[in-house]
Amino acid sequence: MIQATLFRKTIRNLLVALVGLLTFAVSGQEHQIEDLFGTWRNTGSFKNGEQALVALKDTIKNPVHYYFTFNKDGSFSYDAVSLRKGLKGTTRKGKWFLSPNTQRLTLIDSEVSPEKREIPGDFMDFENDGTLSTKPLIFPILELTKNKLVLYDEYHKTLDIYKK
Image 1 (tube, rainbow, N blue to C red):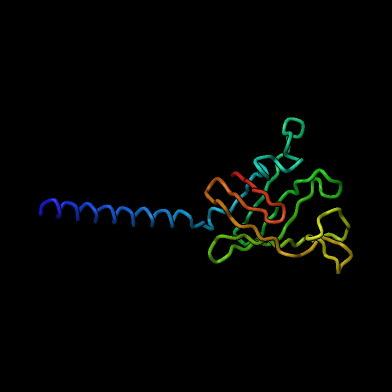
Image 2: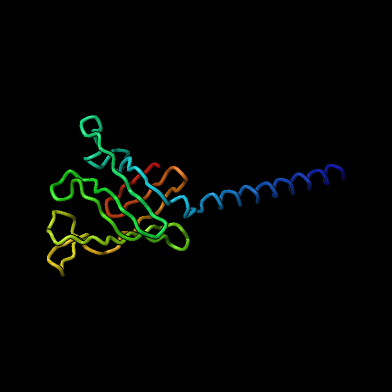
């Protein structure tokens, strides 16, 4: 009888601990919007473990840092990470939106350029002579902490990693 009571207490304590751990794990997956605010340095875009951005492959020859800033008013700006003529050294701006479940980040670029560029078809506005599209870009958020942001780029199939 003492063993049965002890066994029940042990099982109850294990269940309480398990529920506590599950609650902690679920709350740990929620992304806090405050963590997104500020300036992030792009440390790379990785596909199969390799750096996919040519502009970031050799930091000794090309010691340039690229930044992405999310403002509290819902605006953003970022340095275009490109060595191509027409994109190199440019800054893009727009509005950002976080999904209600804080799992997806939507970017709407407000600087649609009238010049034609060699960019993928999904980003072209064919109705307006091949300019950059105002189509929103949506990135699932894989990780968001005070110092690290990892987005999944569905178009390029890459992990985009940012550090504060």
